[in-house]
Image 1: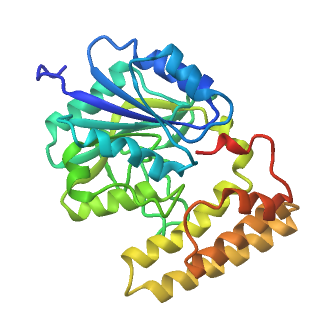
Image 2: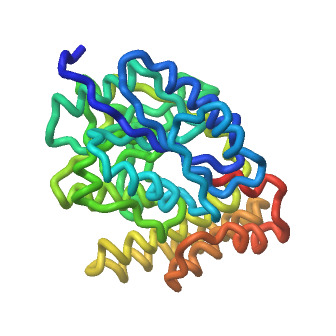
Length: 315
């Protein structure tokens, strides 16, 4: 283990009507024995009493209660603004349904000590229900690849350079945020982290997966929304990424993703998934028009004709 003094790490966790997940996450973090943590929880306008439960069990954490659902980017930004006013060395973005233990977080910290050119690191991400299944080993540019998650691990290397670290478990230097800026909240959900890491690279900060560090993610807990909201934002937000970073290739890339989206919608319709097909077409239309920001209620109304009772689970 590295003998350098351990820095203080600020942890940001979003909550949206998922107090059980958030409280379980906090119980694990507050049991750490060596790493100094300062924890921020941003409650994205929960309607199930989440904020009160969290405050009652953990009165000493930094709890921010939003009056609206800010989404992933702006929700994290609420805490980041406060954190960046303090002399905190490292910032961990952590999903409330993801788990990284102290040993594996220490491996991320040690990589920061050893490789000063790396600004953002993350672990190998495994499926909580199938621990041998690799969910991702970092990510690749979402407009240059059909799948943005890397599904392979480089052999015999402590670090694997990637285009971005998924925000499920992402550790970044404070300096990266100071120079790069906050997350782009126009994405609302999906692609804001690839955007952030892309901008960070322009400032000289590389992103890398620490191959000896592991974390798990309970992906099935959010599977309800994958046929509509997730699909919508993934399709739509590629067009924002293109507009921001590829002005010279804009026509070519927009043409490709428009064709891909139309073909995908047709396939989904043939396969008996009309709700998902509608989400694809809606995402395509909004992406082409430049209609960004949060669209949860509209998407669910268009794709399913009603608002599911568990609507507020996505954050």
